[in-house]
Image 1 (cartoon, helix red, strand yellow):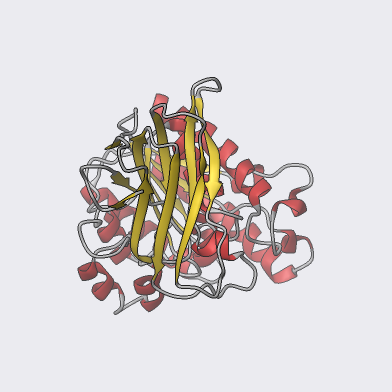
Image 2: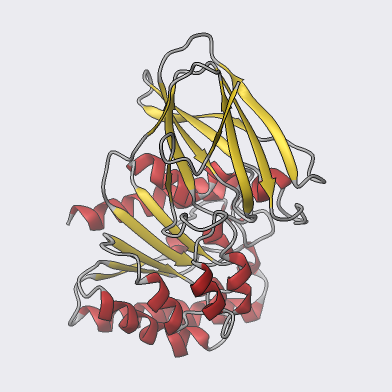
Length: 344
């Protein structure tokens, strides 16, 4: 077997971040992380998590293995080590005409460095692959191993659209079973297009400075704001949302913006405080978006209450964070909404 570093541009294309020229697999640059520390220290750490980052490549190797050096130990109590710190691999199936799951790194959660063999094909046919990186963990180093004489070359998305999403732990991937089940990763596969995930667990407070950082991403085709689950637990949503939108608009005056209200939580059924807060912000966000639309037709409202219909309490791990079923429901609903906007 021959070893290749995932940062080797001669063999892999990396997507989901604009700062992958720096060490590690971060979603914000070192400069931006230092800046964020002054107003939201949690984001400084969470930005080193590689949620939404993936590699695309083509190989004819029958065997594929991986070596991973994480930057910390798996430590989450309500999310598996595979979901938090594992990687999974998808291969394009010519019969089904879609990317299908091939394997995931099942490993000892007490380790920071691990190796895993994804599997073996029966022949040396050229195939396309997507490798999804950890959701709630960063990696110092990732290497892939292929048969010594195998072809390994970079692959691209078929569609050039670039979608950006800013949000909470739900956006970052809590608490799906493995990276490929994150709804933004699902949508990326279905649309065959790049999505940059700026989900920051418990830290999506809509600061105007975050809008400035996200706006550095050039030529986006769509921007999604999905922060109610964090900013909507107090008055930060009311105080910050409009300035956040206005700040982003200075850099991208014509890019379509979707403002999403949050999905239904099981706790909405019995927690009176959450029920009142949700009802207030559902109405307030809708009024805010409608007011913007009088002068800006490129702002849209996505009603999160419609994402889950029947049996919505079965869609989460802990009453809040989607399980795989909930994430798939989110992907289906957001996918249709996004396609409708981009088709316009």
